[in-house]
Each structure stands twice: as structure tokens, then as C-alpha cells.
Image 1: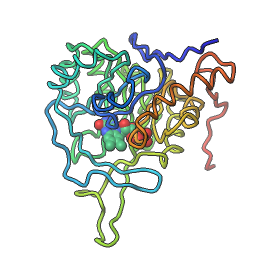
Image 2: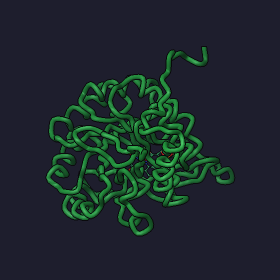
Image 3: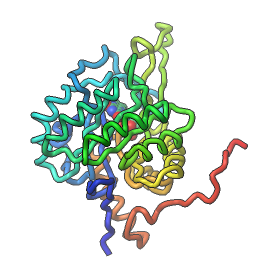
Image 4: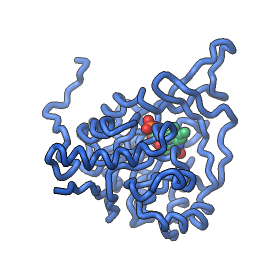
Length: 311
Ligand SMILES: Cc1cc2nc3c(=O)[nH]c(=O)nc-3n(C[C@H](O)[C@H](O)[C@H](O)COP(=O)(O)O)c2cc1C
């Protein structure tokens, strides 16, 4: 029996398999499409797109850490007009879904970006980045459930396309934010974005990254933290959850699906091997056949008791 790998993310957006390319690690797909067959991934989640073009932060913007990396890109992107008027038409050449990741300093900016993109072909949905630790002001909406709900509801009101809300792990209670955005009309949730981190340049006695010294930590080092966040979100909502954080191969993806994710995204690992997401998608089908399962959702662990392990 051939397993059915497709996943419904909401508002009719059905992706062919549960493996996506994470925002900011695949650009807008054009360079990557020269290295991999985009149609073998379930979805491309584009680089964060803002109302106006952004040049991003001064270098250095990335730093390697044990088991991962820090980034402080500062949302470099060409601005939503370029994405809607130029890039979107090029997305139509791919079978894989294209979900445009949207960021902004205010609720109005998110709404404006989505309004502009809504007229464009080739865009299947939106992923709202409500959590970016790299910009000095704004983008803190993801830390407060009420603010997270406010931006979700405002975007929900202007589009019929699928709205995925991407949560920050840098919060005390991620389940509360998840529940708030579900109530405000999110179709699905991505969890998680990067963790705030710092690396020190010991000889210079200062952080490696400029300005605040802070960056977003990603890669295998965050996987156990991301899994716990996904399990918490799964326990709080009924909508699809897309697990992200340190996925480098089929085993990692399986762990997220078992912990409660309906789909996954591959981020930092694409820098190491651009075909990682494709390999995982192929591996999932083989794994399900080997286990005699017909859908990824059959892998899920159902927590009987949600308790505090530290108690
Ligand atoms: C260089 C870089 C740029 C990123 N840019 C974005 C972005 O623009 N928007 C966003 O929502 N997430 C962004 N992310 C976060 C990733 O999409 C992902 O959530 C995070 O890296 C954790 O997954 P990973 O451990 O597989 O990389 C970025 C990550 C990296 C490493």
C-alpha cells in the first residue's frame, strides 16, 4: 500500500508531503531550485518579507556554535512589492506549495503585506513571523498572547488563503500563545523560530555578533527544546502544527511527527546539504511502508498526562 503523505494545512492548502523548507534558509527558492527538485518538497516557506525592502544588519551576521549557529540577518529582503509583482509569477512554475513568510513592526504592516500578496498568483498561503529577535524594536508581538491574537485576527480578516502563525520559543508559556492565535483564526501553527543566544569573541572580550550581541540560535542544538515546544503546542490546539528545530534527517523528522507535529520544516541543515528536505520526504514514505502505516498521523504519541517533569 502506498502511504498518503499529504497534509491539509487549512483553507484548502494541501501539501503533497509533510516536509517544508524553513523560512530564511532557502531564500525565495530560486537558487535552491538549481540544486534540488522543488516539487519533491511539500512546501517552500520563503524568506521573511516586509512592506519595504530591508538591507539587513551589518556583518558579521552568522556565527557557528557547538551543534548549531547564530544568525542576525535583520530580515534582509526585497520588499513585498517585488515578491508580489516579480517573484510570485515565478513560483507558479513549481508544484510545491509556496507560503510567503511575512514580518512587520506593526499589525498594519502585516495586513498591508498580505493584502498586496493576496492579488498575486503562485502564493498558497502566509506564515506570519511574529517572533524575530533580530530587530531592535517592533516584532515583539509573539511574546504576548493578546498581541499575537491581534495580528492573527487582523490578517485573517483580509485573506481567504491559509494563515500559518510561526511562534517564538522565547516565551514563558508557548501553549498560551498557540491557543490565542488558534482562537483568532490561525489555520496552522509553525513551532519554533530561533532561540535567543550569544557567542563571545574571547580575545576581543565582546560578543561575536554586532550591536546587541544577540542572535537566533538554530540547528541540532535546539532540537530537544523544539520538540518540547511542539508537544506543548500540540496539547493546546486542534489545528495542524508544523514542527521546526534542528531537523537534519529522517529520524529527527519522525521525532517531531511522534511528538505531535503534522508536518515539519528543515532549516539550518539545508546549508549543510541542500537535499536534506528531499531525502527526508523520500525516507518518510519508505519508513511508513516498512511499519505498515498509511499516514504520518498514525505515528503520533498521545500524552496521557501532561505534568511538569521537574516536579
Ligand atoms: C539564516 C537564517 C535566517 C532565518 N530567517 C527567518 C525569517 O526570515 N523568518 C522566519 O520566520 N524564520 C527565519 N529563520 C528561522 C528558521 O526558519 C527556523 O525556524 C529556525 O532556524 C529553526 O530551525 P532549524 O534548526 O532547522 O534551522 C531563519 C533561520 C536562519 C538560520
